Amino acid sequence: MDVFSILTMIGGLAMFLYGMHIMGDGLAKVSGGKLERILENLTSNPVKAVLLGAGVTAVIQSSSATTVMVVGFVNSGIMKLSQAVGIIMGANIGTTITSWILSLSGLEGDNFFITLCKPTSFSPVLAAAGVVLILFIKDEKKKDIGTILIGFAILMFGMDTMSGAVKPLADVPEFTGILTAFSHPILGMIAGAVLTAVIQSSSASVGILQALCVTGAVSYSVAIPIIMGQNIGTCVTALLSGIGANKNAKRAAMVHLYFNVIGTITFMVIFYTLNAFVHFDFLADPANGAGIAVVHSCFNIFATLLLLPFSRVLERLACLTIRDSKTEEEPEEYKLLDERFLDKPAFAMEQSFHVAAAMAEESKKTLFTALELLTDFSEEKAQKVSDLETVVDHYEDQLGSYLVKLSRKNLNSHDSHTLSIVLHCIGDFERISDHAINIMEAAVEMNKKQLAFSKKAEGELKVFCDAIRDIVNSSYDVFINQDLRKAQMIEPLEEVIDELNQELKKRHIRRLRNGKCTIELGFILSDITTSLERVADHCSNISVCVTQVREDTYDTHSYLDSVKNEDSGVYRGLVLQAQEKYMLP
Image (cartoon, rainbow, N blue to C red; front, top):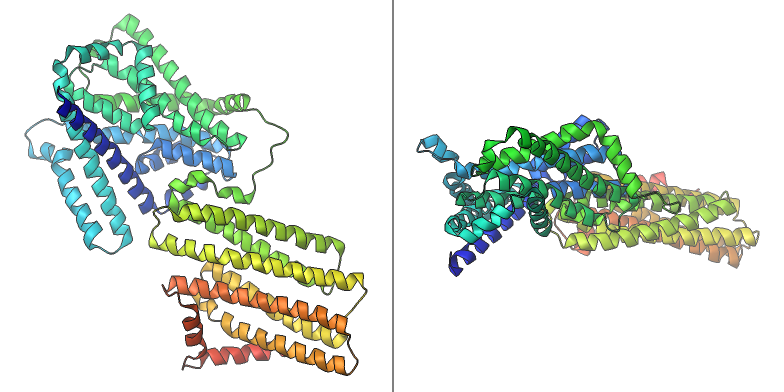
């Protein structure tokens, strides 16, 4: 085997790993977060957990990705540790699908259908179809399917290249000598674990082992210990993802490790004990791709059947390893923004939107509590407004940082639009809570100085506050439900609120001239109405942002001009309705 054969093998390995990577990414994008939602909404039934874990992993072709997602779910508090155990077991079964697909390359025979089933026969067709979908089709879902097809073709081409490059190793005595050393169970396990820990994919390391089988120098006595070690090595990814997570998330990673370690030790002890008495003749036979797939599947199914009844024991072991501390806090809602989800952008975007919706509700609650202070003041409510505003600020910090990271990921058009909307709107939610603080401070000042508006001014302010509550509720519905129809109602109401603000100021000046109001109360009233009018402006911003992003138009001034000057008269009709509804007494 010369230098060029080694370079060919390295190139084949690189293409194999890259093909597996882009195929997994394509599968994740096509799922659009649906697979993750299935896991998130999982029931506590352990059998269902195993089946779902196996199914999701079979689709996304990575037990590491599934396990890392589960660690993220547990860390964010949307999944219990007991639910995670079954999924982790199922993920180990699901990952064996890859080895079965790769084993197709070892099919032999001249029959047309057998030849057709070989990846070398159909992967060029898939590659051509993938190129057509990517280059000539505009639909993003179909482009993602094209990515999957291209990824699979590259994976299989890399596998074939790698197999061809290592085939001459059969005649190299040194290579055969190294593999003979790996027939020792302990050394084989260590080799398999180290290889898988380095490339962080048991599917990929099993594929490499299958490629080596074409040399004929890999016997089952060598392959079985390596496969066992590969199952342990794949735990490294989950363990790394647990760094910086809460205790339950770290326990989920430990469950993955314990499952594979206990399963491997038990399998090896039983297998080699039986071999001491029965002497399995097949251990000396050369392994092939299909045989490795069988061993891989049998081990993971065996380990799951063995340990599923003892899932509580695994959970307890993890809890004993990672002990509770009195200082640990319960997970808060913003922990849904787990960085582990960034590898699945569609799901990360959905989580971000849930958090943004929670932020919107907190912001609305801040404002409405502040409005209550104007008619029913209490120190507790004033403090609540201050506390809620701090929470909203924290939401904005967390969401802003997370969305910036998410924006660097490969998002489809729908998620890209959603990200733009959320990123723009969280600033408006935060500013609305800031204006609530201004209103609260005005109420505190009035209470401290024992000031009160006249009955006339109170009635006018009540109408103004009712209009503000309605525009806030409507604009938040527009954001949360992406309701473009309701968005048409916002601008007419915002215009009426501007008119109310001006009219309240005029009426106050008249009362001031007639000696029915004081300058000090006038300043406070002006502060309140100005804050309320700016809240309406932010509601308008939210509505315009949702409408423009969804319609792919980004000129706010032109949009507002076109809405207000449309010929149909719909806008003026809505303004008149709002004027009648919010007529000052």
